[in-house]
Image (cartoon, rainbow, N blue to C red; front, top):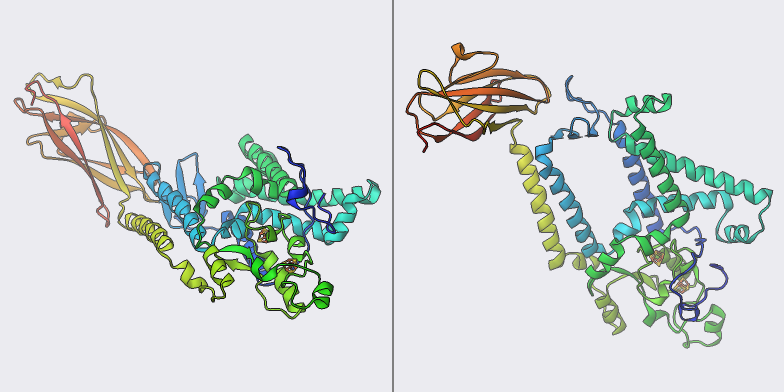
Length: 486
Ligand code: SF4
Ligand code: SF4
C-alpha cells in the first residue's frame, strides 16, 4: 500500500520475485512542466480523435478522407499523398524515420517521449485526472481506498469506471475510422451494419485502453514496455535526466530540524512532495530508475517547496551525469542547448533528415503511371504458318491518378515487330496499343507480339505513356523467344 504518510525504503522491503501492485495516489500539482504536459496531451488527443474526420478533395474517383488506410483497395492516403502497395518503401521509410526520431529525442532530451507523448502516458494521465475529479486529491483517494465497501464507495467506483469505459470506447472506436470512410462507418456502426471486424477491433481496443490506462498504468512502463530498457542502453553521461541533486539536498531534514541546527542539513526538507506528485509513485531521491518516465512533475513540486522556503529552485532538475559531477565540484552546469547539439544528436538528426529528404525527393519525382510485364513461359513462342514467330505477354497498366487516363503501350527496339491484343485482333496489329485506364485502377491486357521469320531471340522494351498533358512514361524490359535462339 502506498501510504502517503509513510514510504517504506526499498532496502527495507522484503525481497521477492513477485511484487503486488501498489496503487499510486498522485497529488495535483501545477507548474511549467505540468502545463507543458497539459498542452501535449490536448494536442495528442485532438490529433487522434479529429484526424479521421478531416476531409480532403481528391476528385470523384478517390475517397475524400484526408488520412485513410484503405485495406480493401490496398491504398494509404495521407492528405495529398497516395501510397500504392508497390510503393510500400514510403511507409517503411516513415517507420524508419519514426524509429530514428525516437533515438534522436532520447539522445537530445532523454525519455521525453515516455514522459509526455507516449499513448500509455497520455491515457494514464487522463484517467488520473478522472480519479481526482470523482474521488478528490491524494489523501481523499487514499481514504476511499482504505474505506470498507459500502453504497457510497460502490457508487463512486461505478461512476469512475463508467467514465473510464466511455473514454476507452471513444479511443477504441476512433481507431476504426482510420480504416474506412468515417461518416459512413459511424452510421453503419450504430445501425449494426458495419463489418464484424469493426466491432471486434473496437471491443479489443476499448478493453485494452480500459485495463492498461485505468488499472495497470505505471506497471506497463515498468514491466511490460521494452522501450525503457532500450532507452536505458542508449543513455550516456551526456543525456538529460530528471536528477535529484543529492550534493545539495543531503543530509535531508525537516524545516524544524534545519532551523534548530543551522548548517547541518541540505536543502531537502524531506516533505515528500516530489513523491506525492509522481504518477509512477517513485522517489527520485533514490537516483535514476526505470520507473521514472521523466515527466518532470517532481521538478514542479520541488520548485514550489523551494520557493516557499526561500531556497533556490532546481534541487530536482533536468541534468546530465556529467553536469552533476561538475556542479558537485562547484562549476556552473552546461547550457541545455549545448547539450542537445552534440555529435551523437547531430548524427541522428542528419540520418533522420536525410531519409526525410530522400522520401520527399522520391515523392516529388515519382510518376503516377506504372507498367509491369509477365511473359508466357509455356509455350515460349508459337511458330505461325507464314514463318513469323509469336510471343504472348500479360501487361498490367497502372493509373495512379484520381481520374481515367488514355495510355499508349509501344514496342521499343525489336525491328519489324508488331502487336495486337484480344480486342483489336491481328488485322489491326501495330507497334502501339491504346487503352483507357480507369481512375486509381490497374488494367490487365494480353498482348501478342509477332516478329518476322529469322528474328533472333533478344531483349526489347515495352513503353507506357499517358496521353495527357503530363506525358508520364514507364518502360519495362522484356524478352522475345524465337526458334533461332540467341
Ligand atoms: S520535494 Fe524537494 S524538498 Fe521535498 S522531499 Fe522532494 S526533494 Fe526534498
Ligand atoms: S520521479 Fe519525477 S520525473 Fe520521474 S516519473 Fe516521478 S514525477 Fe516524473
